Length: 356
Image 1 (spheres, one colour):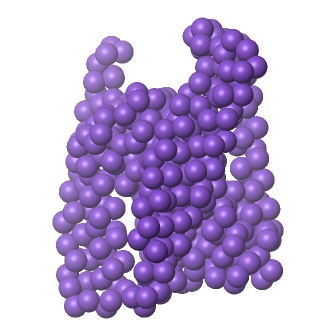
Image 2 (image 1 turned 120 degrees about the vertical axis):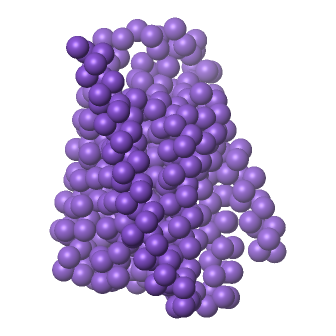
Image 3 (image 1 turned 60 degrees about the vertical axis):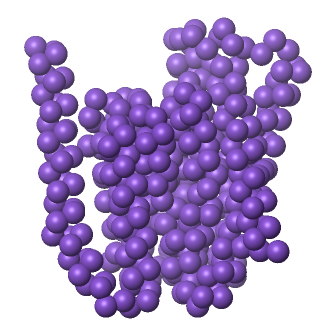
């Protein structure tokens, strides 16, 4: 029964992602807003609805570890696994807005979560502050989208001809989101059942299985968007989802939780800093010519495998944990910093020579 639930959830995710991307790209054309803004809002917030449902449910059930692990793990998974895999499928073009605004905001929101959680808890006031930041971000995107619509006419050619086309477009988005939510819920339920059977802690479940499961809508949506050439949606979906996860999901979970969301010391010292470091990795990668190349996608993907392996070794207290951590800190991370530094400098030098 659990295996059938897993397979059905996977099928729903594939079909739902196809419907959502198709409907979202047509909606962008219909209302004169760029696919990037649609990706940052409609698609990103829609595909993050499983994270919202799981974290609020966990907050009510006093399962703070799952609520926090779900958000932190999902954000790490979104950048490393989803962006990485999408770039491996097809190199992703990154818009200037993402580099100048949205990625810095994602980094800032990650740092804000760390600062607010230093006292060991995200209370109701913390939640209100985070959710207020999300509302301000949405308002800014709406204003910006209206300005773009008044200045550009490239999207007007694909306007739906009548009410029937509008209903079809909205229907695709609604049905796609519904299938994504239901499919991810089935996958998470089956995965958590397996994890509990194996005796894994709730924090590890939240950081790995639940986080990956609730991020499957983002995964399918970004990969499908990449394959269809809707690369603004593919990248905007990840960045927008990460912002929504922190400001929206954790904000609302902190507001509705009777006693606030407890943040474990281990999360403050390791997992949230990893989330911030992953967000910071986006800047030099995005700077290199405005394209996430396949080798950069492979780099992100490799780090996701390393992070997951570390969590498994730590949970099982494996004897090779210390060696693995030392290799990552002394060899892999410095080499990555050097590689990204060199490529960023080369990209800056090329731009400087072009201007000169």
